[in-house]
Amino acid sequence: MSTWANLGLQDSASPLMEQLIFFHDHALLILVMITVLVGYLMFMLFFNSYINRFLLHGQLIEMIWTILPAIILLFIALPSLRLLYLLDEINEPSVTLKSIGHQWYWSYEYSDFNNIEFDSYMIPTNELATDGFRLLDVDNRVVLPMNSQIRILVTAADVIHSWTIPALGVKVDGTPGRLNQTNFFINRPGLFFGQCSEICGANHSFMPIVIESVPVNYFIKWIS
Ligand code: CUA
Image (tube, rainbow, N blue to C red; front, side):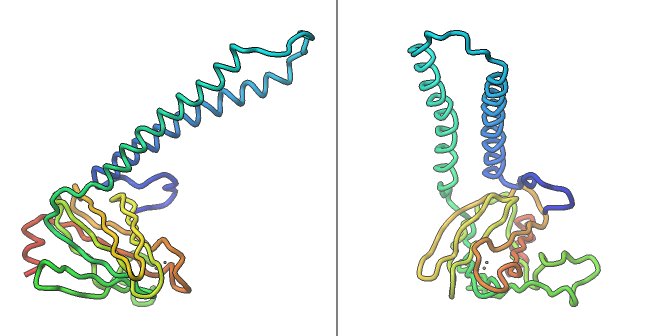
């Protein structure tokens, strides 16, 4: 989860989020290099005395500063496309979880295990335990096995919601009348917090998501 003064991305808990962070750092590095170069050139213009009165064109420099940015953009576009298709790949999931967005709570269905269904509401601050996570904890957490491919199906019952968990690299809109699919792989045990990220009404901020990642045998025990 995010803690004080954590302004960057959260630590990843899935291979896809790890790749997303690598891509973010890669793109940021290119951005910094461009900003420094352009900033330096603009700054140096102040000290240019423009003594070459006959300078009207420069074919070579025009070629360079047209083609070079195009090549740099390729270095961003190709890894970006690779990630995009990687995120969309479904690799034989062992568990399917269905989550339905409501105003303002999530409900879950484990359709392949005797149709377990439950609602998951945020715990209000006045009912919170002393070690609880304010505005993030829920009454019924989503228990999922670690080290297994998990597929989630997301939809909504009223307005558009978004099932978002930063540490797992998941962000899927729940849209009424549609069923969206994505998948992830949790590579450690623990609690992973998320929040709705489509502005869905008055209590949009108060429909968090909590995933309890446990070893597979614990999960089988919980589900049965
Ligand atoms: Cu549901 Cu915002």
